[in-house]
Length: 332
Image (cartoon, rainbow, N blue to C red; front, top):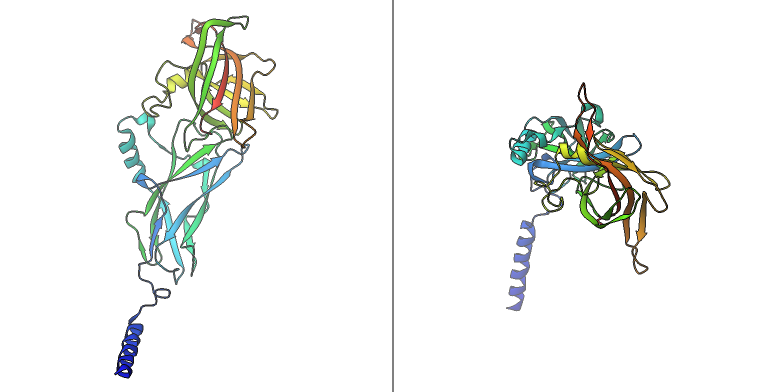
């Protein structure tokens, strides 16, 4: 009896083994081509550091779905997309066209190729495409996209929900970035004309910093316009272009960490140098760990435009404000 049971079990095992699938050698999914994106409206962002007027290189990816590497070479033909940017702007900014994202100027970037080859047996199941960008000269207040789409492919299918993409160009330097807003906390005092601290003159503000070049950022002078903390609601409290022109100053860090303070728009500003003043410093917080805090130590005077010049009258400025500030980066 035991002999018969053994034979039956062996026969059943043989039948099961014959019906098992070899998942390592058979494709169970379609080969579908797509453009990799990570955010709503198929946005994919890459960061471009300033490099003394030179181009920086970033990448986007053309993907090929499937459980196995593609058995044949595939050619993917790209083109400029005409759909996503309009949808993105309307959904995020409605009729406020001043905040609309822009198409990257053609003279500021180069896409390595618009005809991408996915080689046979590509185990990565994607191909990276280089995008070279010249960050210098891009507006620190604009969002830039390179809209791309798959026009057609030599074989297989295209993912109808991921066939297009908004490739966002994000710039940064060592002092500020734009993938995530960079804020500095400022504490200081207003001074009299002789540089003495005025009674009850303490000032404090959160400064939004924007990268302008490899070694310069733009912030507001003093406390800037009187409004909500810029870190509370990054949309409603974001400064207007008029405010930026009126209060914006540029901090340029030289090789020796000395800081030059210059106007961004209509403001007039004059720095007051001295020992430990108008410098950039990276300081270790303690001897236990390696955490470093980043500071600007500033002293300057500024005045804002009250009335623009006309053909017959000179510009009228408000009175000088004298300040001394310690400005500390918040996101690190």
